[in-house]
Length: 103
Ligand code: SF4
Ligand code: SF4
Image (cartoon, rainbow, N blue to C red; front, top):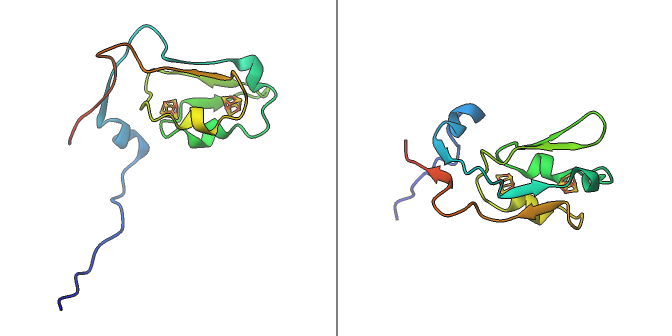
């Protein structure tokens, strides 16, 4: 039987180069909102490391700054957040949001 060697390594690509392969048709309505007052009591800030698009940025006073415009709509932030009401999550209005394209 023939043994096939597989290459399991991923090509080196910078975060910005990866983001540049994706287009966003941003709608004026934020499809995800974050209640900063609820975040002030959060000890994990799990969203910061979980979001693949780096859209949650911790502030020096323990808060969170969030920007919805380059969201992949993966839902990870909503899954990892344990604080009731911190994240309000919907999909963008029809025809808007992330548009993946091949390179
Ligand atoms: S969004 Fe959720 S996980 Fe992220 S800082 Fe706020 S409460 Fe914590
Ligand atoms: S849905 Fe995904 S990409 Fe969008 S903010 Fe949440 S974790 Fe980040």
